[in-house]
Amino acid sequence: QVQLVESGGGSVQAGGSLRLSCAASIYTYSGNCMGWFRQAPGKEREGVAAIYTDNGITYYADSVKGRFTISQDIAKNTVYLQMNSLKPEDTAMYYCAAAAFVHGCPEWAGEIDDDDMDYWGKGTLVTISS
Image (cartoon, rainbow, N blue to C red; front, side, top):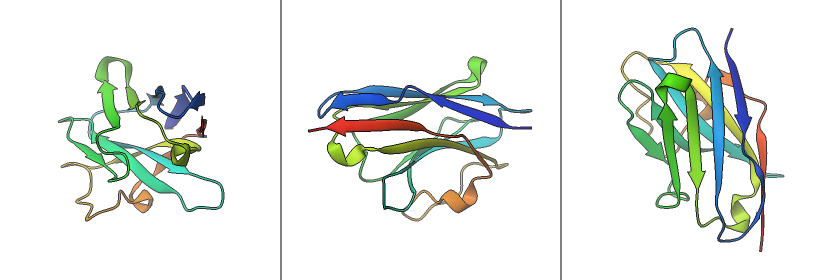
């Protein structure tokens, strides 16, 4: 059984930083695409960032490039999302997700697609005030 537990959400002012963590209880951490997604009130869920566990290749949504960094600690089966220069429009519930892929995360043409992910955490809330 796969369990993903997010932590690190909170409320900060615009321009501030937060680091989210996703602890993965997973049979085999290797060979997984681990992603962060977010959903703001009244909006569809969108992909933010992803990382392939075996080679560390990362993917980012255009809206967060240069501000967010996804990373992992393989020894801890944990994925992080460092969020800097936060904006009010970053306010959302943030979810960690995972899916097993042999060769890497999917070849997303543009958006990081949540349809490709199989396992989801319960989310952690991020609120950015102006």
